Amino acid sequence: NAGVTQTPKFRILKIGQSMTLQCAQDMNHNYMYWYRQDPGMGLKLIYYSVGAGITDKGEVPNGYNVSRSTTEDFPLRLELAAPSQTSVYFCASSYDRGQGTEAFFGQGTRLTVV
Amino acid sequence: AQKVTQAQTEISVVEKEDVTLDCVYETRDTTYYLFWYKQPPSGELVFLIRRNSFDEQNEISGRYSWNFQKSTSSFNFTITASQVVDSAVYFCALRGGGATNKLIFGTGTLLAVQP
Image 1 (cartoon, rainbow over the protein chains, first blue to last red):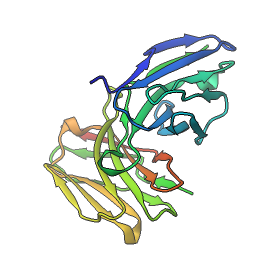
Image 2: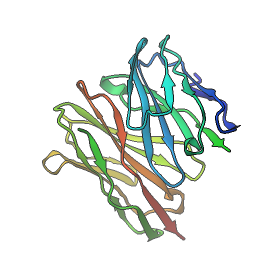
Image 3: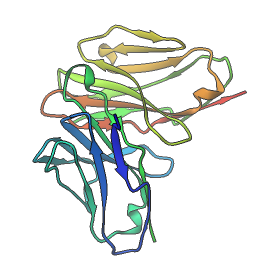
Image 4: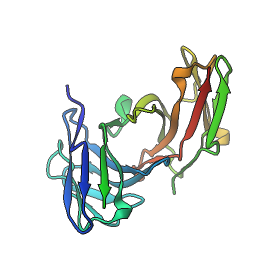
C-alpha cells in the first residue's frame, strides 16, 4: 500500500517555465488536497477536490491549476513560474466522513524557482 | 468562515517537563473534525489524533493527551514528561463536515525540547 505518492521530490524551475506536480493515492479516498509550506511557515491550502470532476479553490489558488479526472490522481499545474512559488508542496487525501477523515500526506515536492 | 489559531509560535522546554500546545478554532458547521499533526525536522507530516464535533471525550495515548472543549472552541494537546524526540512543529487542523469541507491548518507551534 503506497499511500500518497508525489513526484518529483525536488525540482528547480526558471522564471516563466511551467510544470506539473503529480499526486496519486491508492486508498480510494474521495477528498484530495494541495498545500504549500513556505520556510518556517504553516500549510496553506491551494486547491482541493471532493471527488472526480470536482475541484475548488483554497486559500492561495493564484498561479495554480488543478484537475481531477480520476479518484486516484490530482495533479497541480504551475503556469509561468515565479520566485514567489518557491516552496514545499504537499498533497494529501482522506475520506469524507467516519473514521477515516484524517488526511494522509505525501512526502512533499521541494520546488525552487530561479 | 473557518479558522484555526495557534497563538504559541515557539515553546522551549527542558526534557521531562510537561508542555501544553494550544489550539482555538472557529467554524459555523455543527459537524466538524479536528486534528493534530506532527512535523519533525525531516519534514513529513505525521497524523496524531482526530476528534469529531460530537465526541468531547478527552484522550490519552501514552505521554500524549488531548483536551477538547466545545464551550471554548479549543482542542489543546499536552505532552507529559517531554523528550528530545518530541522536538517538532505541531499543527492543529480543522475540517468542516458540511458544505465547508476545506481542511485548514493553524500556523503551527515549534516545540524545542532541550536535553
